[in-house]
Amino acid sequence: MHQSGTQNLQNIANLFSYQVGLVHKPIDNLSLYSSYGTSANPPGANGGTGGGNDQLTAANDDLSPERSRNIEVGAKWDVLDGRLSLTSAIFQTDKTNARVSDGLGGIENAGSQRVRGVELGVAGELTPQWRVFGGYSYLNAVTTDAGDANESASGLPMVMVPKHNLTLWTYYDVTPKWTVGTSVKASSLIYASVSDTTRKWTPGYAEVDAMASYKFSKSLDVHLKLKNLFDLQYFASSYPIYATWAEGRSAQMTLNFHY
Image (cartoon, rainbow, N blue to C red; front, side, top):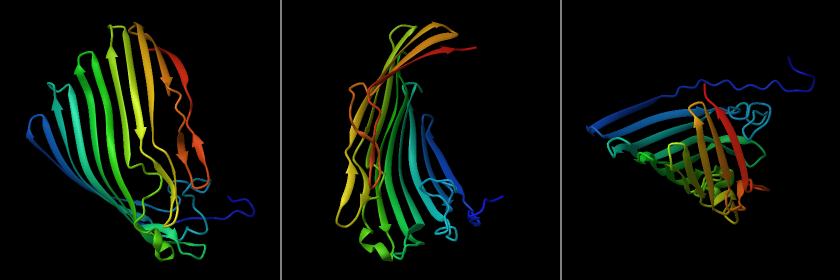
């Protein structure tokens, strides 16, 4: 049912995606893998008709899906008698049929984008009391073709994709009941908009959090988290005409019951 004045919008597309992979274990604690996969993103898939950056509108409801292809190779290495896992991967993701402006106020499937990246990860125990979890990524994200109407933007960096990104958590059991931990979340600058003449971005940042927990029993514990420990001022998200501040220093305490 549709109210008077509303549009009945729909996009009908046949989508076929697949993924294949190969894993090889040259030794017991090392796995090497490769994978190839595809995906598709029709108009409205992310935002629906109620809003969002990819909502279905009269300007895009007749467009074809955007198509993506990902090629990846990587490794997983278990060390310290299997207590710690180290991972690494290199990959390339290509998007074709990307939606771009036609220069006349409309949208067409005429663009392409490419992301080449490296990911490193760590998870597990350095000692029976000391645990670490984290990852680092390097992303070289480029608009390879912005369409004939915006040809000067071809070859420029993609927006909302930081080139460097790091997350690292570490925990230490001071006693069987007391655990403390800290984390670092860091990002390089993020572009909000780019053109051949101007670029808008928000600066990089490094936020530090901390935590402590105490176990009263197997069924009861208390957890304290301190977010943005040094009250760093940075932008959590950015857009072409505005940016939003990240949350300042804050504390959260939770009491957990297990049954």
